[in-house]
Length: 409
Ligand code: PMT
Image (cartoon, rainbow, N blue to C red):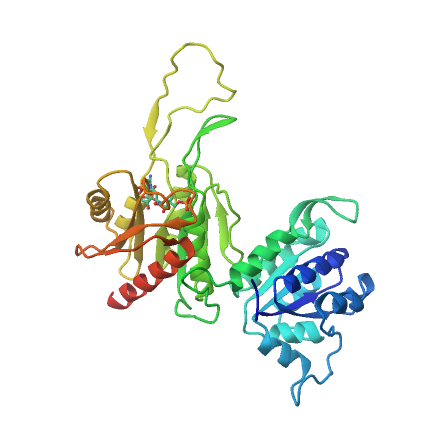
């Protein structure tokens, strides 16, 4: 699965260092060539020989070892790596990286690297929540490092809270996401044609509460929106993801803002709109919301219960009104009938530059599926009908089609 991929696994000095052994083994079994760098502190928690046995490669611990010919270790590992992952990433390595400090093999390799770098912070809750650490994490995200938020739970120091190393399968999936070729289109981590652009993506299905435990929603899994986030990140864009609840985890590397209700999505989208060069509105947004939300669970009484609904704000329409000349607005249309006609109407009404229309009744298309079947419709009437394809591949096709629109403007 990861054959021919060269992965550098950096291990720093935290109690979760022992979990990196399982990750090293999983990566090795998936076919990757895994090279481990351990800091001095990491070696206090687990011995290099464990990783040597699991990866079949020598473990790198010293700065001044010659590897091949004239090349020194940190340059060699940095240039050969398809991806570097740090498990666990301590507050110390985050701080060093955020401020360009290079004083050992791992920190120098990180500074010399041009491949994607995935950081998996794990530490005591107090340390993690310290504003200095949070500032370093924000800075690293802005600089394009991929970061998986730590999990919340029991910590070795005896506290409970955020700071646990995220589940290893989550880390492994993120590594695959960053590296793996999907059906038709590579993630192309080396491709950077969206560099310098800020992309806003909305994803998931909004929830409109009826009472503290019930809501009205839809079947959006978030897969289409997240595929766009992943594709844009892999091609160099900065991504702001405004996400309603989804069935899948958001890609690392985007600035993620969670919302539930349409009203909240509306507020967040409008707040961040001025930063965006391109907006993809893949979220399935509720058109109506209960006029009243009960404070307590609604009790079963009469045979018929009448629900009064009121219209939610149309976020995309509002963006169409406010859009500046340099901004591109891409809407989605989820239709069960008259696909082209309805999509064209939305394209015009909402002042869009492009609309991606999916007939959600077709098998392999729309909500919850890994694939989609869409027609891409331009304001001049041009239509591109695409066959069934993975949402990841489709996301890249959409990016390919949107980029020239910016040049035209
Ligand atoms: O999340 P997945 O499971 O992967 O499924 C993907 C998807 C089917 C949700 C996606 O491909 C899709 O079609 N998203 C748009 C769904 C939708 O709400 O379509 P619509 O035709 O109702 O809305 C048209 C456009 O207006 C959409 O871009 C929508 O985000 C936007 N809208 C709608 C209502 C509203 N109040 N505000 C909006 O901005």
